[in-house]
Image 1 (tube, rainbow, N blue to C red):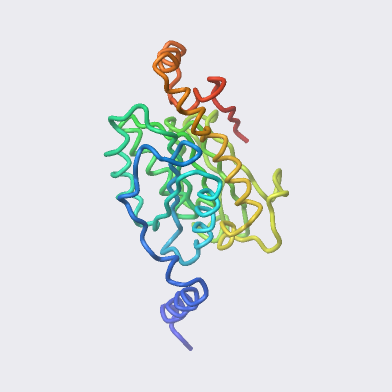
Image 2: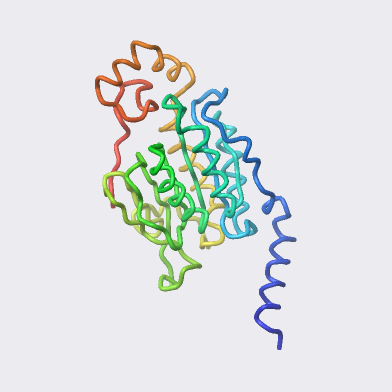
Length: 256
């Protein structure tokens, strides 16, 4: 009988052959920047889950976001601290930065919230965080305009893996929990589980749709950042410049 460690190693090797080593390739941290030249304003930073071999669907999500006209970069789960430090360096003294969006799967989803907490210490707001099946997450901090949590409970709810969990927030108004086995069964593909939720094509469409809500078109962004419009935003108490793009209203959020 093989030892458990040997079985785990074999499982990892099989996963590597199945999805390719590209799922374990670290992202280029030098790509972290506060502006972009794409049709829509904003930067999206995506985090794979543990090791990356079970989260190669994150690569596809990043590709779909780029195809929609938004700048996106993909990173390994263990790069979250390095990426966070780069965001602090680029965004902290740049109040006119474009929308900041973070997406993560599994432990990468947990890390996305850890990043937000660290960014809060530097007075940096995050426009949108999308979490896919977080496993051991902290509470959602108040410096996120919206945390959109797509998850599915399962038989292993008592264990910190094999399932996602509902998030809690310091302020419930900036959190939306989306249970795909309850109120959003339209996002549920057959045989969806913790290890393939980020490969779900229906969820890919939902993510791109949500990201576009927070990333105004380039002409709208430029118009909103004319001096007179920036002055108007300051008078109206707009906290993040990304929601000045058209009507000046923030995006509605809700907690479930």
